[in-house]
Amino acid sequence: MKVYEKDQKVKITLKVNGKTLETEVEPRRLLVHVLRDLGFTGVHIGCDTSNCGACTVLMNGKSVKSCTLLAVEANNSEIVTVEGLAKDGKLHPVQEAFWDHHALQCGYCTPGMIMQSVWLLKENPNPTEEEIREGISGNLCRCTGYQNIVEAIKAASEKLRLGQPQYQHQ
Ligand code: FES
Ligand code: FES
Image 1 (tube, helix red, strand yellow):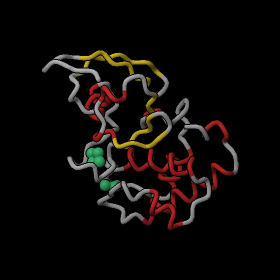
Image 2 (tube, helix red, strand yellow; image 1 turned 30 degrees about the vertical axis):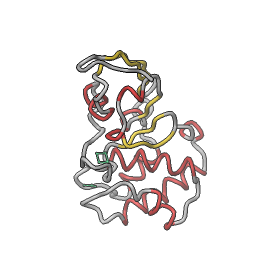
Image 3 (cartoon, rainbow, N blue to C red; image 1 turned 135 degrees about the horizontal axis):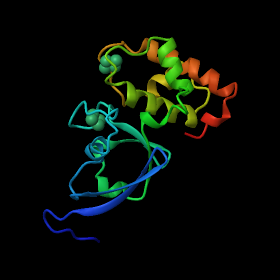
């Protein structure tokens, strides 16, 4: 087991949205803060008890709540944040569907909700309404009442199944 001194900083490497970044962190520093410090301010903090999911990113292909991981635990991992979804300015089908279906209001939950939706559709490309609701149950939204988010995810699932393979391995 690795033992760290108090106040010791540790060098970590993260690959975020395809770009390798190095930084020095205290072992207690949460991944969510480090991502935001690195400029990925679409990753939001909505609670301090791991409930809200506003901090959701993909880490090595899995959706994780970045407020409940230490940055050192993420060392050498591949992370995708909402900033990494669009390709050359073209929105990812999930982003497009959120826009088309009015699935956001204040937008604070949206980056985490979209990353969770991307993961959900990778795990289950043709989810039922119930599966969608269950799949985003770790992501809270105060504004929308969820209905339009569910519709957006349904629409995105159809788009993804109809093609656009370049987006299927986010
Ligand atoms: S900030 Fe609420 S779950 Fe991470
Ligand atoms: S759009 Fe405001 S919290 Fe979801």
